[in-house]
Amino acid sequence: MNQHRSDTLQHLKGKYVTLTVEDAQLLVGTDDGWSLHIYNRYTLSCGEWVGALTHASLRLKLVDCLIDDVKMTMMFSGDKVLTVDLTDDGHSGPEAMQLNGPDGSIVIWN
Image 1: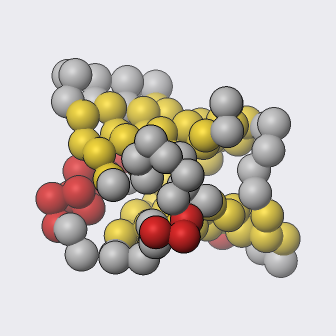
Image 2: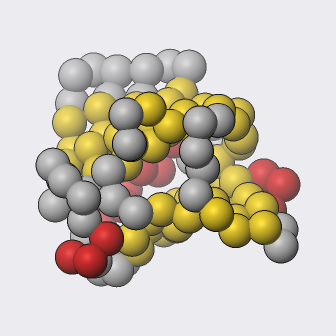
């Protein structure tokens, strides 16, 4: 696990985030200026339903976020789970994910 990158996402924990699909990427944004751009394959699980989020916007509270070498899992209130494929097969470019902070900081997952 990349501890630095995992710790970076802890800034989002406990916040309400908006998940929006735009230009073939998933954007996870907060009201205070954090934005996580997800370019790799992802799925959203909502109870029994599992699928890709398309042409929609959801506002959810982020409960926890875990990262290992093959996936990132974001757990939201209401038992919704976003899973991002971080393997080479899940890559669609330009990078796997990019986190932009309100202070101008950038963290990139390749």
